[in-house]
Every structure is written in C-alpha cells, then in structure tokens.
Length: 222
Image (cartoon, rainbow, N blue to C red; front, side):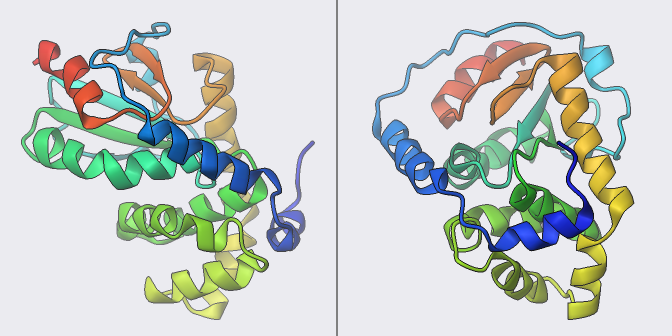
C-alpha cells in the first residue's frame, strides 16, 4: 500500500506495538556470545550494487578503499540502533578513518516513522550521518513514544531545523518517493528483506554484528 505524505505525518502519533518487543529481542541478542567469523548468506554483483539509485549515496571513507560496506537499515530497527551504538564507532575508528573501508548507508524503512527519520536526515544535508546517529541513539524516545512528531521536532531543532523547515521536509513528496525507491531497489535487486543487511565486497551478511565479527570478515580482504 502506498502511503501519502499526509499519512506519513499523521501516522507518527501511532505507537508501534512490536517496537518494545523488538528492542527487548535486540538487547537479548546483544548479550549472547558472538561467533568470530559469520558466514555470508549470498553474493551480489558489486558493480550493480554501486550503481547510482534514486538518491545519492551517503558514504564515509576513501572511495578507493580495498573494502566497501553497504548497509541497508531502518531508523526504527532496534538491531540497527544497537549496531550504530556499539559496533559502528569501532568500525569507523579502526577501518573507515584509516582508509581501509568505504561505508555506505542506504535507507530501508519499514514504516512511516522510519521514513520520516530518513527524510529528516536527508534534509539535514551535510549533517546526514550525525542526524542518523542521534536518531538511533534516541530511538526509544521517538520511535516508541506517544507523540513521534513532537519528539522528532525537538531532535530536529537541535540540528538547526525550524518548525517550517521540519514541516517542509516531512511533506516533500519527491523525497518520500525517493526514499521508498531506495528501499524498493534494495528489495527487488539485492533481495534485502531484513535490517540491518550488510554487503561487504559483494557478500551478504544479515543482522547486527560485533566489531570482532566484522574484523574477522574485513581483515582477510585487506
């Protein structure tokens, strides 16, 4: 079902019943011991994967890094938030900042709240990644709250949004269509069906991973 821009805004007041359960599951999985070397769950053609889509890719790291990681995530996914908060800082310090990894984040929203979060990050311009980081860190406050619109507005104000620019972003039908097109392409062309999904030099890995697991995958490729 295609949701209108009005639906995206009005639906921000509804509380997703499954969110708390998913958050609990994410914490439980985080507490479990992790294998050192996850096995890939498929492969993709990296040339096709890196072709331009409906929106310009948001990336970190050197374009000619020996390893390229493409992550498909949803802003309301607790597993994605856990990866962002616990693994990504080490990944950035150890591999991205040192020129070993190029990291690309692509939108794969599962609901209107996730769409709104990604739209605001896109509207933040050069602050895309800082906005994504804040939204993940405060996910339980805005994604599972009673009034998501007000919570997102407060977060957005800290990033320099006004009431007017906030409303303009969330009623930008072209941007909404582009975010949905990124998700559709991920599902149709690269068989993304859950988040987070990572493509590391063409191999597919599903689920949030620890830095030890990611290092076990990345190091042999360097």
